[in-house]
Amino acid sequence: MTRVELWERPVSYAAVGATQAADLLQFPPAGYRPLERRVRLGHGAERWDYSWTQLFTWGMQRNSGMRIEISDTPGEVSELTYTPVGFDAAGNPVAPATVDSSGEALFGPDGTPFIRPGDTANLIIPFGPFHVGAPIRVVYVIDTPARKGFAYGTLPGHPESGEEAWMLDQSHDGSVWLTIRAFSRPSSTMWWAVYPVLRFMQAVYTRRYERALAGPIPS
Image (cartoon, rainbow, N blue to C red; front, side, top):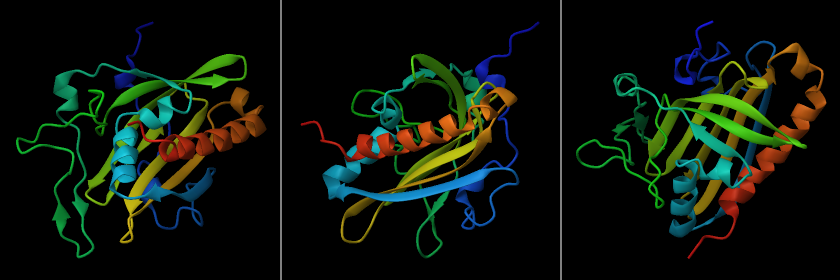
């Protein structure tokens, strides 16, 4: 049997991008359980810069106890990925904030390139005494001066099927907020059998994500 590389696998659900729907909690994709949580991370420019650079370099997941294995995607494929255009309050398009004047992507403080739509990875998640692989693909990125975030969708082999999004925004008073939105369900009969455990672990990691971005800022 021919092995299909991770970057070649399609996502394992149909409603790609549905975490952006305003009515997600009322009308989630059929058969999926929705989730939304919003929490204040702190205040000021330093907290904002720390939070979004961590978010855009997988720091939130790493600081929550996961190991990230990035899939090498051929250049001719990654060049075709689409970066959505952001808009300001008046509806005017806003250029992505994390590219330089030549259009090249920037990097985090540790040299990690910022997340882009189409990026594929395998998240290695501690699950009791075991480690579970959870392959995902970044399906969209929001990148404006006052609002940044991304969503990833599950690939075959993930314990769940669905999508999860993390959005940071800075209010007019300087407060930094994280909104987590998701819809999911177990991906197979085996995972349905331990559904309560999956829900518990999702709640655990939701709070770890918050602590990862609200924790002490390295000097």
